[in-house]
Amino acid sequence: MKRIYFILFLLAMSMCIKAQHSPILEEYVQEGLRNNLALKQENLEIQKVLENIQQAKALFYPRVTFAPTYSLAAGGRRLQFPVGDLLNPVYSTLNKMTQTSVFPQIANVDELLAPNNFHDTKISVQYSIYNPEIQYNYLIQKTLLTAQEAKKKVYENELRYTIEGAYYQYLQAAEAIKIFGNAQKTLNELVRLNQKLVNNNVLTKDAVIGAEYEISKLNQQVAVATKNRETAKAYFNFLLNKELDAGIVVDSTNLSPLASYESLDKLSASALQNRQELNQLDQSILASKTAITLQERAAKRPSIFIGGNTGFQGFGYTFSQQAYGVAQLGLTWDLFKGYERKSKIQGAKIQTELLKTKKLEVEKQIELQVTQAFLELQATHENLRLVQDGVNKAENYFKVIDSRYRNNNVLYIEWVKAQNEVVTAQLQQSLARFDVLIKESLLNKVTAQ
Image (cartoon, rainbow, N blue to C red; front, top):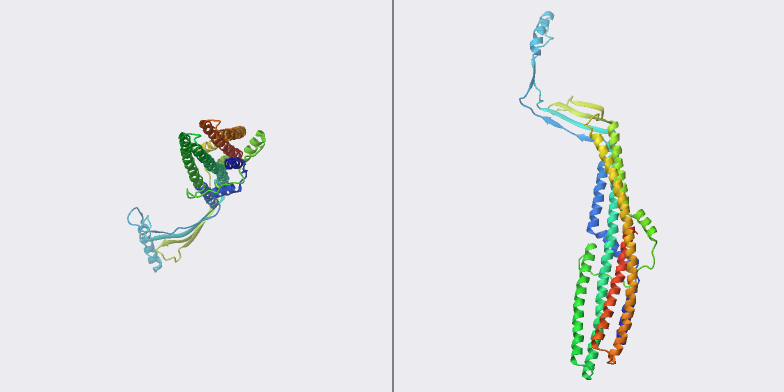
């Protein structure tokens, strides 16, 4: 039995192992941040916003277009003008008077309005000198990028907490199996002891059968704990985007709750400063304000551009004496569009107020989350202290009962009850310790530590 007590002592010591700032767990978190599929989707969303910025930036550059056209026409409206009928008699008279043929005979005009065998091969250039919609749309896209990056950090913070919680759940299930394994050793020792006592006619055969039955019940609990461990392993590997049955390294050197924390006021202030949800809302508010400025400037000021066309134009693709060039300077100004601009300005203002209200609500929610997490952590610490005291008492009680049982001074059922209480107390201590670690992780999440 000394060996059994030594095992129980090692188990109790293992529950005091230190694990805050675990390098193994941190490495797993970083792996999850690199490989998690949902986080990869957030990275793709950022890349999409970056492309939107590039598209908005492209509007600042000149637009050069090569636009050749070639037309064939038949039928349709015609341009008819009897210029020959009007001028030919006059030209004939002049030729007779001058005794020359200087004035030729000309045909009447009879042309299709749609040009036939006509080409217009040109390069068009247009450059916006001033356009508030282009300028402020670019600023809005840059602000939305910052908001999207803040959204990604929000998910990273949530993912870190989820990975840590899954890791602790796996460790807790593994520790439960270890506790049951130690209990099995104790019961196996009891079977051997009872068999020896039966052989010496101190106990009857039912004591051995009862001990074996306790082992079978314990095996059922081991099966459930093993299922819980494998489920936790699969979920943990899913978060890291790994094979679901991949092995997990157990940190056996650095797993214990912190002894002290900052005050609730400091934690709340830290959360309001660090939470990226608020940064995301700030950027959204800034984008909404920029949209207001965009609509106001676009309503009050015209857009100015310069441009031109150069190329070849004429009948048939000869390019001989068909070159031309056109330069342009223009502006566009919506003087009236049925109060569309006014409605857009009002809509942007409403959106801004909506986001400001949402930010106030989120701030209150964050303060509530910090308060709840802080109080829950305090409660779990107190619960851990109580169950640790219960483990000590249960183990001491078991030592007394075991000694008396060996001297045939207590019934077998009292020994079983004392041993079950030790196992129950150790499981409660394991749950309480990992519950503290999970609550610490939750407090770190809500304060964005």
